[in-house]
Length: 254
Image (tube, rainbow, N blue to C red; front, side):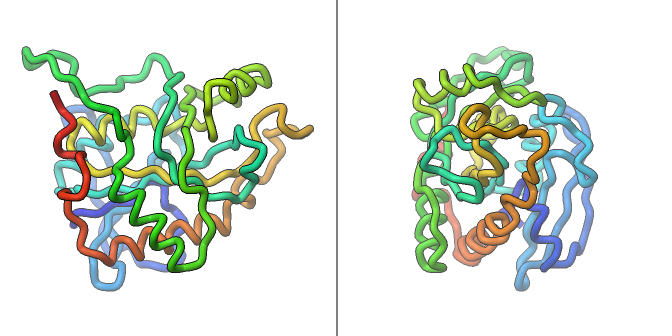
């Protein structure tokens, strides 16, 4: 088992859970499900917990990513629910994220804290695996599913939504979508040498872009079809034999 989907709760309607696993890590426990997908075991991981009880700023990102690495995971797709900062990218859109802006604070965001007496740095030229992004776009085209081929993820702490003036600032800085969970998840995956790609599912237009109360929106409803489409694309990618020789994810640590 070397493939994982994070946040892909929609697949439970199609595939049966064959095992539930709890992994002890140096950073705490992590729990995930194993599903049989056409004869192959794939790990499904809910970052907010199976009952969606863990807020974004309290997710144990280090335990989660360490657990995936420890069981042999090499390729990960992370589904992230996002708000669109771009007026041309509407609700229900699918965005293949290729870069990020980090506005989080207070999160335990690295394995390289110097406890081992070493100073390490990680290259972020391509935060998201080039090969997984390319394969996702290719398989989307084969399935005739429209996707936005690149986008900048603005990562914020949450759990509050952003203000109108914050959204204006993110637009000026070149942001595309905004969310609360992808950093440090993507950074930790890179530090552990795993291939990681994030796929944004747009549940709403960001604050101030429409005259609406974001707390009253049906966010799940807006992305229901997108979640099914993304799952189908990912599973089509996962049917291929994936290696780590088509990207630089194993060579990012200095």
